[in-house]
Length: 469
Image 1 (spheres, rainbow, N blue to C red):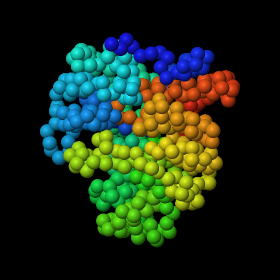
Image 2: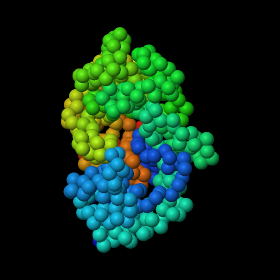
Image 3: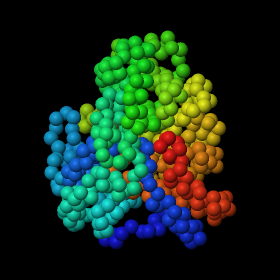
Image 4: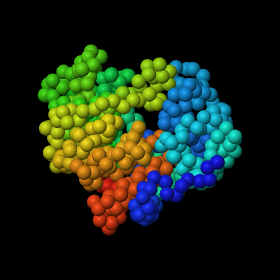
């Protein structure tokens, strides 16, 4: 049975590099967590209520967890994942937990396993391995912890050493929970990020109704192109009132366009009539990335582009359970040609900051690092989603450092819905970066004193600067 995590995990095997990695890690392991992009629920911080039970904290909301279980034939209904079509789902936390525990072996050698073990040990003090035999002991212990004040969301936020965390909201969100945090007595810093996918994608369900609602909230006429653009400006300004420093764009591709305004207006009118072809919808999304970049020059929001996911790949799961249920699949993504219209239009403008992410690792050395290594407006986001792993982070550094260096990257973000995994994910990133730096030193490519400076920058300095936090 597990007797606690290995203190030297993820460090190099070569002794002198291993020793240096450990020394580097000691200088950054306790630095504050800056989490500039994620999907935790702002209601947690606003209301500070106890988490309901271990299953609803750890299993049900985490698509990393339930997608693996589903891949082995365990229905989402049995894991308590809420349905949108009215089908009954399991609601008993202990039943869900026992099913999860009895299949814990499925997570062997995955990032999820390391995050979960870290959470069990460092958040709840459990050092044995979760299994069918230990399921009830784990459940009872965690459930008991969750009733204590020190395990409420705000207390965990402070215990995790979180300096600032950004959630992600649609332009249609009233940000009531952010208002409650901002106007309350708690000092924790929780900000929002502007995610306009549902009002810039003609293929998003409810697009026409969403655009009308956008106009209502902004007080503009979104049946016109000019009114629609103004509505985005108004809502972006509203988000900035709640600490927003970034926008986030999860498009299927990295395609950008720079259409004439008359052509864009005609395409927008077609989108409102539900008459766009798939090609026209993609062109409109691409043009809106350029419009969002123009707005970023005006209002200073950092622009994040998260392309390349074939989202909601299963029509059946989408119909039964809705979006973000583990069926988003990476796809090949072009950046050099796709980003050129936006870069030709505004890519050399002072003050523009665009952070690029990818789910296509082959693009790092061939396209992304060279682009970020020359365009002042471009920075590379960290290894993301399917590559948010020790191996993915190592490959990321190997593929990008020689062309983009360290200072065209932006540190780490955890991009999570699973609250207790936040310190675990940041710990993995810190360990992997320290291992990479130690190897650079021991192979004569970096001076040792520089490695200590870079370790601090990768952990804390770069993310603060990149996201204006």
